[in-house]
Length: 371
Ligand SMILES: Cc1cc2nc3c(=O)[nH]c(=O)nc-3n(C[C@H](O)[C@H](O)[C@H](O)COP(=O)(O)O)c2cc1C
Image 1 (cartoon, rainbow, N blue to C red):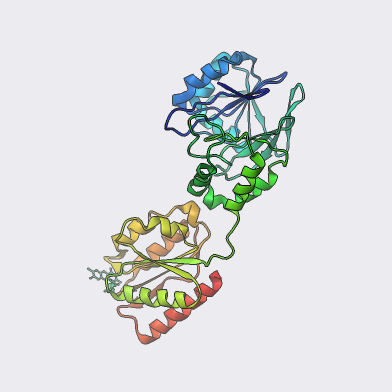
Image 2: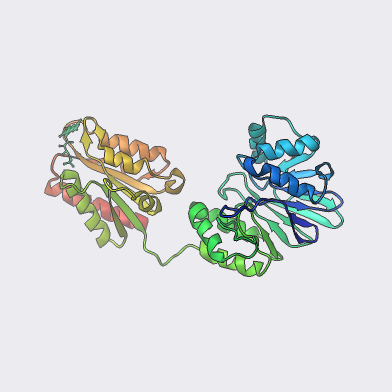
């Protein structure tokens, strides 16, 4: 247990070489816990709380989002205090019922609603979805300027002393976990009160010095880069076959039309990151035994559906008679909720000069649509 400032205690668990599992206790006329810890840390969490006060004196257990392994924390708290009110957004409360498989006293935290703890302490709830959980919210303790922000402003490393660790750890966490949700992160930052002076996330370092500066840097990190060229990943097997010839045509035409092109060799490991990070995807799928080749499946089954959601794509490839590989890959990408630019473009055996010209034209239109 660490007293962070008047009425705010750290009761989470910060083990060496682990990401800290943060949770907080706020004391007023009524007392509130913010977040729990994962099952393996639950006993230490309970001890930390009891170092401040008996669990039965706590009125509320509030969640910034659903932690999937909070069952033991809830169980231990409710063993001492069965009537404690559990508070979260609508989906959080619903999820907690599925995690605990019990009935508990519940309260829904509506957007912009308040919870008065007495003694001048008021918590304000602001719903900030998709950070990255769909059910997330941030909580602001109005009289003290403390922000309990779940995964927003979190980091993967907290240092030994937990406070004011290098900004780079928060930046790494953003890149590794929140980047696909950049628009939601920007929306959440706009809702952070200007008077915030303490940043208390669910994981990683707590910011007590220079909170405004931290938030400004975080906002810069998440701002869209308007100067950067759009990138298209073209994923195929550069094995000299007919589909590879089609791919070469597409790659050349895209480059000539102002986009960055990443040629991804589907037979090599480690292309997933580039495919996920590109703004659009083009996949070359020849047909063998009524299927696409296994290397192509390897590459596209590594896609992260969250990251590629809504991005444009099309599939092309050479075939001999039935061409199923094209449609199978096309449907897979569609099921990942990517946006088809055109129907699959199949060519019987070797692409003719006319096929090549049509592919050049298609690639140019694709690049134009992307820009
Ligand atoms: C072993 C084998 C199986 C094939 N199976 C099919 C098939 O089921 N349906 C089809 O349309 N073409 C089939 N083909 C034809 C190929 O799709 C065609 O030769 C195509 O041009 C191969 O493209 P690539 O040169 O890019 O590998 C098959 C070819 C081979 C060698």
